[in-house]
Amino acid sequence: MDKQPIIIVENLVKKFGSFVANDNLTFEVERGEIFGFLGANGAGKTTAIKILCGLSSPTSGIVKVAGFDVYRETNKIKQNIGYMSQKFSLYENLTVMENIRFYAGIYGLTKKIIDERMEELLTDLNIRELKDTLIASLPLGWKQKLAFSIAIFHKPKIVFLDEPTGGVDPIARRQFWDMIYDAAHAGITVFVTTHYMDEAEYCDRVSIMVDGRIEALDTPAALKKKFDAINMDAVFLKLARKNVGSL
Amino acid sequence: MNSPSIRVESVSKSYGKLKAVNNISLTVEKGELYGLIGPDGAGKTTLFRMLTSLLIPDSGKGEVEGLDIVKDYKNLRKILGYMPGRFSLYHDLTVEENLQFFATIFGTTIKDNYDLIRDIYVQIEPFKNRRAGKLSGGMKQKLALSCALIHKPVVLFLDEPTTGVDAVSRKEFWEMLKSLQKKGITIMVSTPYMDEAALCDHVALIQKGKILSIDTPDKIKSQYRFLLTRIRTDNMYRLPNDLSLFPGSESAYRFGDSVHLASKEKIDEGNLTSYLEKSGHHRIEMEKIEPDIEDCFMAFLRNET
Image (cartoon, each protein chain N blue to C red):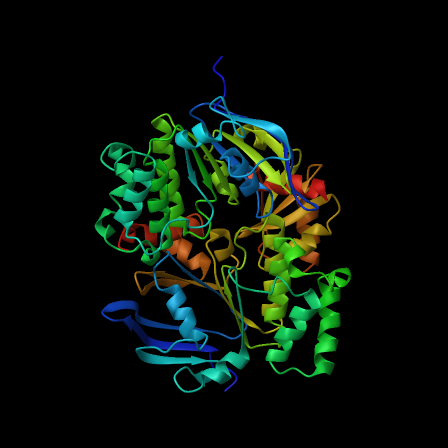
């Protein structure tokens, strides 16, 4: 049972009226994997992610996340996942500590556990002196790192990251990926979307969506070989370019 | 000697205690494609807002096409095009209605300057009756650019036009900018994407309100003062940390499928290989490389801290 993939998707279809946003997606994500979910704008990534997070139902197909069924057990899914996006992460008008307490509380952690993990977090991120600082006062790079730490505070099985490093400086971006690596090493599966193609190289496997379908799914090395490309940017351009203008 | 299109002299702007733009000076020549490169919070948007007469500097002076950015704001607004950071158009108007709106407020028509926007607009024209809010990111960009060009501006300011947009649309967008440049428009673009810097004539690297460097991309790269080695092993997870502990290592950062090791002195490859093998790495590959803009930017950042 433990060897089962952490995400199972079989023939996932999602329609909005006659528009097919997700057209027969089939893929699996292994435990502890760093899985890159790429695609052009409008390709259907956000639709699929919402379904995986239990926020939306498929039109048809099988979808299981952390062993729970996406039609009937969405609450169990939500309790077992973490989520962080560029657009929404922390409450700007609350302090670092208040945000930690708030999110940890939502996931039902006890005060004892919250206090223990909070100590670890403040030390690991070296932000002890900032614990009573409002999020609005923190630079973006710090916010992102803190948001990620909070997204995995309840030690979920999977964490979904939606363009987590947009606009962040190049050093902070890499520090962020060091944190992602550490989390994956500790057994948390990471499902990440990004527009930075160098970040696609940090993933164990990458899938590329075009017009609602998965056009490629493999390790970065295999994809570069298959498409005769020197880097993931070139792979992406080869796959996505011919379909630009369809939306 | 032609006078520059944009001239900024010791401009500063604070929000309360935060100095968002700290004594910035720069010059943009007519017809240049000029990149303002830096992460979020660097001061790019604040600088743009001052240059487009939307914010008044606390100190310093600026001129765009000879017009003072504070005193001549009315005339300035007629000759510049501006595409702000977030999608700024009307979500509930259609593509065509948005374009019509901007043409009208600038006292022109879509037909008058259609030639200028044709190459861009044809890509979204099939959707001209679709509400702007329903467009994909790449399409919104094209529409916003069309609206910024509809009155035939002399200078175009684009604030992070490619943020949040996929790699294909980004590439296409820069191709469009290059074509616009050929039509004689001075273009100032801000971006957090280091690879886009390489496409500019001149680049100003900016961080925390201050300029780190201004030059052509090639000169910035040639002034990089470290030696760079590109390394891959079978354990990319631990490689950056292990390399940072190697004697002589200035910095070791991930770059896609490898790590860039910067050093002041030449690295002895034999020594480095044995060191890595002792740390448990196999299938070690290394080669000397030239820096790209991102390597240079990161060296400036490290210098600042």
